[in-house]
Each structure stands twice: as structure tokens, then as C-alpha cells.
Image (cartoon, rainbow, N blue to C red):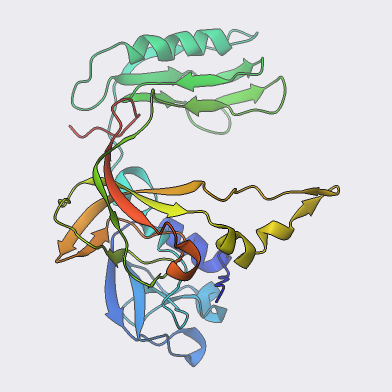
Length: 308
């Protein structure tokens, strides 16, 4: 069975994005409009005031305790709890980072000056988890060329001086491109032996699944949940029938892997619970062989939030 969820239920999406917190599990709160959710409904841990915009949504609603609730489908699929989005996974105050370089607008192309300041701060040592901030002074900056800015080290902040009058304004020239590229070095390397996910179905929005053997994992491990792309799954989703200007537009190929990057939050027997939900369902009928797996990994060159 193919699961199609209304991912952009905007009233629920906006409130969920504005609400930072971890998830809890409660049972059967009444959904808006008098309907009842499925037996298990995922909830955000933050409490919100009632919002009339949610009154017409049975997919995302505020339950009687003031928390966000999510209507589930029969197999357990539900809209993802976006309260995990944000700095530090939500609910973490932004650090106060001292300014190490200040750049003022020149009236011409400011790309090189801003990039030089970023590169200089990137060479400073990490102190308390940060290196320092590059402050863009009030005024209008011009960025030309096609490459944009690049930030390649952890602990560096690029900060403006506010919006509106008296703030920082940036105008991009050149071809369509990204304003700022944040990219570390190298790639991840899996460690240990991948464990097979043995559930016949893991719903989208779920945080837990069972593996054949969880003995090689520990709470706090960074893991990759690998979801294989198979011909059966591509056909199920209708992606093998996508055509544009008379040419096939199947953008995922059989044999490729979709990686989900998570941290283990809890382990109970062979059940692994993640720190944030999965964004897609895992249906064994369409993923075997080879089947979905989870493995620990390292990524030394990755840009990361470092704790003090």
C-alpha cells in the first residue's frame, strides 16, 4: 500500500516549526472537529495556546493538554514532528559568539572581503565550542560572481546587523546560485557491522524500529539508517513513469541508497529509538532485497555544532 500524506498542512506546519521540543507518546486524544485520532498519536512536548487555524485540520491539532497532536493512518504513518528542527534539535538557546572580524560595505563587490574574514576566523582556535563571528556592518553589500560565499569550519558565525532601515542588506549578482555554502571535508565512514531492520513496516514519522542485533550500538551513537532504492519501490511510487519533454525523469536509480542521519536516543532489547523521526516509511515488501539497515559512523571533517 502506498502512503501519501498531506505533508504541507500549513496551519500545522507553521505551528510545529515554531514549537521547539522533544516528542512524547500519548494515547488517543480527540482530533479537531470532533474526530478521534488513531490509537497511537505522536505529540510534541511543547505546550501551545489554541489556534483557530488548526480547527479545520484533523492531521495536526492541539490536544486537550495544549500539545500538538498528529492524526495517524492505519499503519501508523503521520506528519513528522517538526519540533525537532532548529539549533541543537530545538529548545537550545543560540550561543553568544564574540565578534572577531567586522566587514563594512565597500560600494563595490564585497565577496572577497567577506570571504577573507570568514577564512580568517576559521583559522582561530575553538574556545567553548566557537571560534568567533564575522559581523556585517549596516549598509548594502554586493556579491558578484557565481560561487557565493563558503564556510568550511565549525564554530564560525556569519552575522548581520539587523533588518530594515539601519540594518544589513545583501544583493546577489551573477547567475542563480546559493548565497552561502556550508561544507566540511571528506565524508562519513561507517563503523562496525550494519544491523538489519527487521520490522515488516516502519511508519513515516516513527522514531523507533527493531534490528536483528542491537548489541553493537550505544545510546548517543551517530547512525545512518540506509533505505535501499529498489525497482519495486520506484514502481510503487510511480517514479518510473515520470516524463519531461519526452524524456524519462526517474531521479532515483535502483541500487542507490537514501541515508537518514540520526543519533540513538534509547535502546531496549533490539529496539532502537532515534533522536528525531524518520521522514519516510520503510515497507519491507518493497525494500527487500537487500533490506534497510542501520550502522554507526564517523565524519571527522563535518561541520558541526560543538558544545562548550
